[in-house]
Length: 100
Image (cartoon, rainbow, N blue to C red):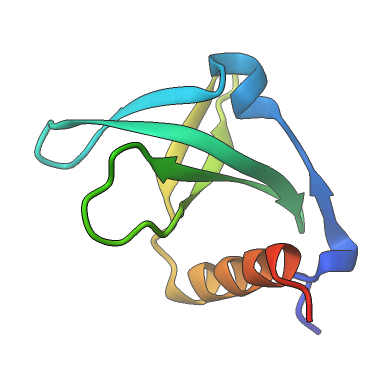
């Protein structure tokens, strides 16, 4: 049974509450990218943030990051490295935003 379902999802606002509606992140080359926080949700004991790049050239698809809470309570965003987790989360977000 896949725990990544709409019934198991809770909308959240940790990143928006901590950093506001706009974020600056650096890519792997050190370039600063500006994002808007589109949505956040918790599912199966994990937290995710959906960000949309400002002035994105080309694709206007949102990006989904894992929200990680350090032992001291600080929040950070990480790229979802696991392919299965990425598929589950992206399919869930599609289901949440484009219900059939």
